[in-house]
Every structure is written in structure tokens, then in C-alpha cells.
Length: 471
Image (cartoon, rainbow, N blue to C red):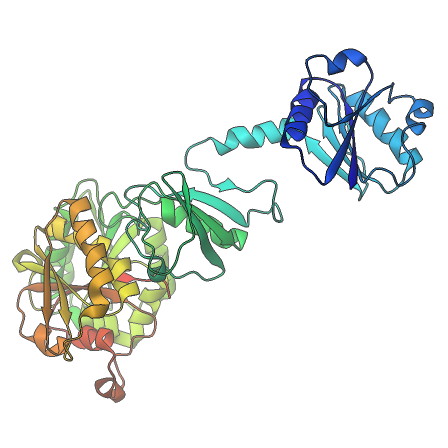
């Protein structure tokens, strides 16, 4: 049996005593010490032992504080100065008993005592008020390390986490350990789908959790958000001289589909002044053109992207491959539009080719946004030479729900065919696909692998929208 001494005074102490006595914790034996017997008026303490004496008197306190009798002492008093005197008295009597003290006036700030737990009432109230602010993470206060490693997040309706299966969400250095839905606790499995208004209990590295919180709360309200706001066209004249004006016109066509966006154009390796003058003629309030006569490195691009809140990068396939530029672009974690043979205004269909479940669930929301913006038909194509479509059921469930959420139709195709051959026959389509770090465009071994993503990417005739994914 653990004996607990509560030195009590004031309303908070009464509330605390009411709670612990009503709970009737069988392993704990409570002794309630108050200065006046009036404290016990209207207070049901049938399960606790009452002691009436002045705890600020060390002589009187010694009479009830026998060495080793109490496992813990709680000092819950409304006068912080009196509480501090009581604390010092107990320490004279017992150097190592665990003490929990309520500090209402920062009296205990300078105390160094490894056996003392201080509850600062002002700080507790401020923290609880802070928790009720919108758009701030709710962090566990009384369990774990108190460092933010346990967090609760409510999933917004337009979150990129909505309607995704747990298995499709990479969880490195963090985990979704529980979901609260309709006032019920769910212990999620890989097949569990996250829904809007779910409360996710997540555990992990505090810094990682803060980033996860931002991703969950970030609403994809308008393309290319949440990756950024504006568009960035890269023109490497060494590769793009013949088609530079065509690429610029396509970028402007996309820009005009949206309000309050800017197009930033970075032109480099300039050797043709005639093309340069034509490009400069397109400059206007929402089109900024930056010139570099030599090569530009990853640092220049990164600065452009940061300074102009870039969400979508437009680039030709030749420049994408040039000096393995795709490796730098992958580091930026932005959407990439690769120009193809079809002009943007001629694209009639956007198509998502089934690859891996995790990838599809991560890119599908963006596929709906770009299809709505370009007013194209949206297709999910599951090409499988073996004809085994059983594993696609969860992906189709996810896509059909998103179709209802976005109020935008999607056609689902399942055919027993090689996906590369099927895509080659298509015309005027935009391929929406994941952008992975391990893509390989130069190796001859690529043709002997079953890397559908790299093989699709190598088909430079089709325009593509690449979506960076967590790996």
C-alpha cells in the first residue's frame, strides 16, 4: 500500500481531493492534511484519513511525518509563500521523499531538488489555452518525455493524408499509432484508410513530427500548392534553342489558367541573341525573366525557387537529362512538368499508370487538381500482362473516393497488356507519375529491368507531370 500525504488548502486542492477519492484507487492510501477543519466542509473524504494542523509549523508537521511512512507528498495550497515554507519543513524532516508542489507564483523557480516535481499553474493554464488555438499541434503534456514526441493531429478535409491507406504513407522516425474516429479508438493496420476529421495519434522524433504536422494540415487548395505557389520555366538554350519559344508559350498558357500566379523564367547558356530578344518580349507584370549567359548550377536554381515560392518547374526532357539535372530537381521536392511532343492546349487526357500502391495514393490528389485545371479527362490505367488485378482493389477504392470528393469523374481501365507498349500508342495525353530518387535514364540495363517508372520517363514524346514522393 502506498501512503500519500496531501497538504491541502483552497479550491484547487478540494477539486483534486474530490477526484482522487471518487476514483477509489485501491493501491493508494490518502492522508489529507488541512490547517482548518472548515476545509473538509462539503467535501466527501470517507476513503481518506483527515489530519488538522498547521503545516507551516515544523514542530507540528514532525508529529505526522514519520520517516519512510509516506511515499509521496502533494503540496496543493493557494498561498505560494506558505507552500514554500511547507516544502522546506518537509525537506528538513525527510531529504528524499518525493514531493509534488503546486506553484502559483513562481516561488519554486530557483529550487534545485531532484526529488521535487513543480507544477506551475500559470504555465499549465497558458499551455492549455495555447492548445485551443487553431493550426497548432496538440502535444502530450503529462506522459512520455514531454518533448513533443507524442502528438495529436486532426486531419483537414483537403489534407493530402485524407483517404489514404496507412501503408501508402512512409513513416520514418515516426508512426501513426492510433486513430480516433466517431469517438472511438481505432488501432490502425496497413489497410486502414485515413478520413477527414480523424484525430491521429502520432509518435516519433519531435522535429520530424513538426514536419509531419505541417504536411497533414497543409491543404491543397489550388495547383501547384502545397508545393509552392508560382511556376518556374528553365530554358537551357544549348538544348532548347529550337523549341524555347514553344515552351514559353506553353508555360504562359498554363499560367493563364490560374489567378494570382507568377511565371519565373531562367534562361541560360545564351548563344542566340535573336531568340533572346523574342523571349524578353514576353515579359510582363506576372512574368519575370532572368538571364545567365553561362551555365547555372543547383544553387542558382534553388535561390530562384526559394525567392519566388515556386511550386512547379517546367523543363524540356533534354535539359532534364543534361548533366543529370534531374538529380538536383529531385532534391527540390517540387512538381516537374516535362515538355513532350504535344502542346499543352492540345492535351485531352491525363493518365495515371498503375505502378505501386504507395506511389499512386501519394500522387492521385495532384492528378485531380491538374486535370481540373486543364479540363482534361482523367484516366487510371492498370496495365498488367498477367491479368492479375486483385492487388489494385484498395487503390481503386482510394481513387473512387477522391473522385467523389473532387466531384470530378475518373475512368478506370484494367487491361492485360504491357504498360509501356500501351502508353506508346496514346496521343495527346499527359502522364501523371511519381518522381523517385532512384530513377535511371542513362543505363543500358534499364531495358532489362521491370522499372516501369524509369521506362515511362525515358519516353520523351509524352508530356509528363512528375510528383515527388517520400521514400
